[in-house]
Image 1 (cartoon, rainbow over the protein chains, first blue to last red):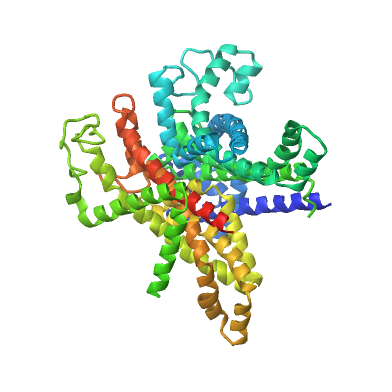
Image 2: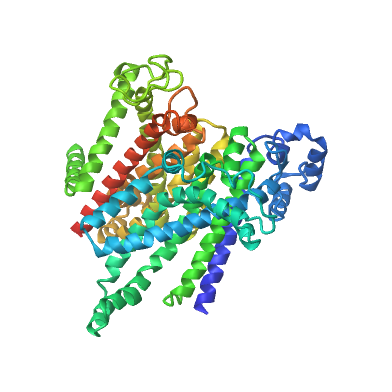
Length: 338
Length: 286
């Protein structure tokens, strides 16, 4: 009962946040101009009178503000964010094409973050206040203090310009046969269709952007895991486990690490949000056609419909990720019986 | 009053000086503040070259003793440009942290003391803003207000106070338990007086320490917005914007994007070390 109640509470919170964001973006887009068409179509309002007409009717743009808000909510729930004049197509269409690419980067970045953060956190704790600990702390402090664009440029210089190991950018090399689009995730598509050439190539392209994101964020995992391990190792049940005669390895893995990883689960959703935010810079530098690059271009063109639409999608992804982490936390942690 | 502030500063320096990371961080941060003040007072005259004047050196000159950070395509001195942008960074982060500190401390402590509906509403609002990705929201707000450094500051101010409000609320709840608050209430002081005179002075130290730790984060987000062209407009130099405008020369003249980027990282590292030092010192005191 307690667990279900807790999940229901988090779900309610997620819905509340979603409506809050919808309200904020609605207020923002209405503050742009007296004419609500500007928010939906931007400069396209005068270019495409037929679309302007359709939007005015569909979203009741001549009605009072509360009516417009109702249709705005209905519109965004149906995935209609307006017309992107910088791309000459609907915002939702561009997002459908670009979001999978961003999710690809964030997925690999998340894996690399954990693959770097967890072992380094363990080493940092084992060698507490010794040379490896200081080295790791210096390394992650440099990572979390560097803006994502600096890390991306450094990686580009090292791996593309100096060692010539990885491509400088893009989704897939020219001349490589692309897999047919099924899921929208190009790496998954080429894997499912056993197109190994495209698979290897797309992996090579996603590697540097993901690494750039991960290097900026793995430090948080190291920091949290290190301090939670240090705390857990002081606990009585660790002493009990040792007194039982368990090997140090088994005490560490089964008793200490499992419990010390709980704060990392909570941190995971925050990290996901930070990774998403940093994709703006990384995708821009590696010209990776994701939603972040779309946002950077939309800012350049002052394409309001696109900016508001992307903001909504970004926050929704973050809110859903938070919710998923909360639910995962309740499943992993039996102590939550609120 | 002045002697009290002196004592606090002396105490802060003692905390900072008690470990290596605090000391190194303090040196970097103090250097950053000192350079900002010198440039803010002296203007172009304290710089080796005029930061927006072209052809002060040959184009694309790599770093030399004449041009520490090299020169760009039109022969502007990169070192002067980077140094000239330091007061921007300091002023913007002080404005954002200052407003967050002011709004957050007032709202947080009042809502903790008053409780009831005001507290609930405030906490839901902070929950909401907490759940949002701050960079993206700041972008959306500053783009709709119109690109420019003032609007960017408004956007960051809107996104930044909730963390402080939540912190102040927690601290104020703790302080309200003490006997002297009970005594003040018994003496018939109004609640606004109790909050202003007795609660806020007692939570200020914690709040200011949190603000010190937070500075690096503000500079990082500000650099990101500046990179996206939402801050100081060209030809005036700004760190993030410089990285963006020079990143195309990464292969031919790597110093151009890398030096401004590295300066951002250096300042953020400085605040990070200072924060770590302060935190370690306080934890070992407890």
